Length: 302
Image 1 (cartoon, helix red, strand yellow):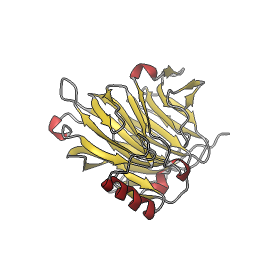
Image 2 (image 1 turned 90 degrees about the horizontal axis):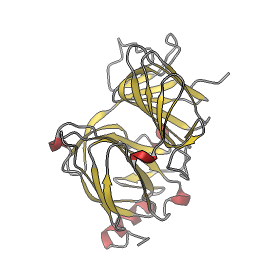
Image 3 (image 1 turned 60 degrees about the horizontal axis):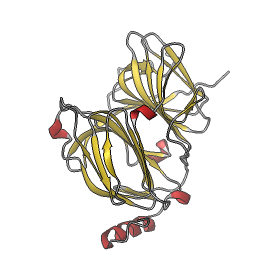
């Protein structure tokens, strides 16, 4: 019998400011590298107020990481020091490997109604790949397969493989899986996971139960007073469930459907030296990166 993963923590996203004044919800970030290894940060930038996002993310450097942007609504115009430029829109993904260093900007524009929606995930790179050549993977919505399984569950496979269907983003060193999952009301969804990998789910619509033994769920809920709350494993919009180890997750819905991002990856297990947009293994490497940025030698691959 497969071992179900149980919830370790439920984390409520928190408002924060980033870039030139973008209002967003931070799900997790600095200080949690051991819990989410190989992932570093997840931001939810859904908004219906243009004044809260139009300032965007002007020119800034990255080294030692990958940034993964997934758009639900609106669009983001981007450009970088390597001469790449373009626009990603609804359903599109940009998987950027900063590697040895890149300087870029991302400017959200919203749709005709002024709505902007999407997520940015940061993934760490191991020491052996931190100085690799930077690369972009702009994946348009039509290139991302959507599969349906027998009970009405729909899955967009961005990275990884489900029932023989592979996502368009492949050959990533931390062997990640990135799925956009929609589960109808009154439905159970079971998904196999690799033992030893970090796994979490971030709910973006509705709610679902991610812990099936309702009388034996034991976990921390961060961001609220839990003294008189018994959730029975339910996770709702803008909340994350971080799982313990196991061979599968089991998700069940009741009166309403749910949609969530399901992420997993192979932990790197190396020291992390992190300041702002640069993540290295040592403070000396971090200092070198910022010195090179100041003196104009940051870009290693023209």
